[in-house]
Amino acid sequence: MLVHASPAAIFRALREGRVVPAGGTGEWWLVLEHATLALSASAQRKFSRYWRMIRPLGAFVTWLLLRAVRRRAESCDALGVRDGSAAA
Image (cartoon, rainbow, N blue to C red):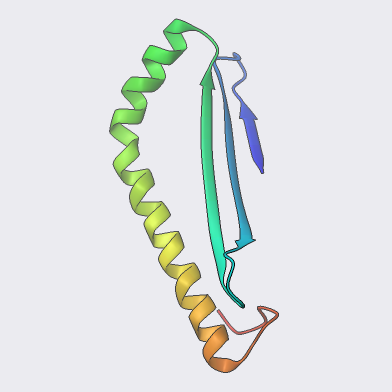
């Protein structure tokens, strides 16, 4: 978990990733959570403008991350590796 507060205390941000059981044997979910909290109305307006610009890029980067994780998990599964020690 990464928590960040800007030096001027304008906003706080949280980013977390975790793996949780999906219910079936050997099935897992990768859960990514992002949250921000603006500490003033002015900060909220500024962050809203920023977010409209950066959101598509953030979604693309998240998609790339999930794709890489899926490939790695599938390659480990194909090799019968259960501890994640397969080469990247």
